[in-house]
Length: 362
Image (cartoon, rainbow, N blue to C red; front, side, top):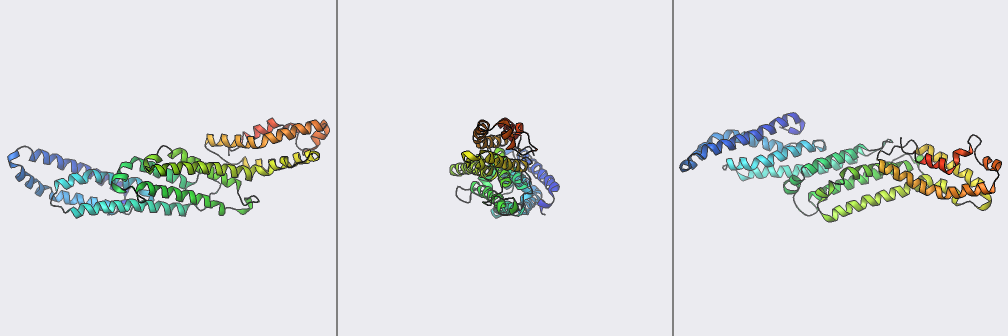
């Protein structure tokens, strides 16, 4: 029986395994412990009596170990294996005539299935990360976070029994490989997206927000869990450093791709072209702002950091240019440097600052 295809039935059988094991263990203690001189005789009688139910229990345990668990069945698989780890030593003690190979086979199946789940997770991520459809958090990010939370609950079982070891085939290295696969696939979206949205260097500013959203969301929800799963100090440090580096890199590239064209208008003007530079800046700023204001950044910390970074990038140069234009222009000339349908007050540094601080609400 493949319990991965009938989860509710599997739960019933797991409960039955636990109860049956406890009942048999209790019966053995009561029956064989009352009169020590006849202990062996009573033990032999008990084993004969328990042979049939124990055989049924072992068949169920074997079925659980042979079930075809997919990436969708991480929780029920680990719950099943946790139960098997709990009951099999007792069953083995109560049935010494059962060959060791039977129990070894169950453990071997459990270990193979646990490693198979890791491979299934990678295939799932590779298949699902094809487009991002302007969503803030990709479904595979949520999938990976949920999987890590489940793994964390069963980390002792995983490290000690299902995926033991300290080398490259240990659970820490395997789950790190899944995380690396996820990061690689969401990065590859930059090559799959609409090229019309890209800047002159082939960068899509919106995609950088998508990457920042997903990395921040993953890092925030798993930060306290990964240490116990990765275990190896070098993996823990490497993972943290890579996430930090990615956040800094994507933030920098987003700033350059989105707001770089606007700020370059102010940085490149000469003394005699301040009005043209301001006109060019406003045109670029409006275009960028209209595109960016529809983006959603769910994480409040990341949202505020991006706003502050934009403000720090734009406003020092803008305020200098704004003040220079005020000094060199009378009010009529000052106003004429802006589009006719725009009032001057809309472009004071304070108004632009408030506009930036309203970004990323979606």
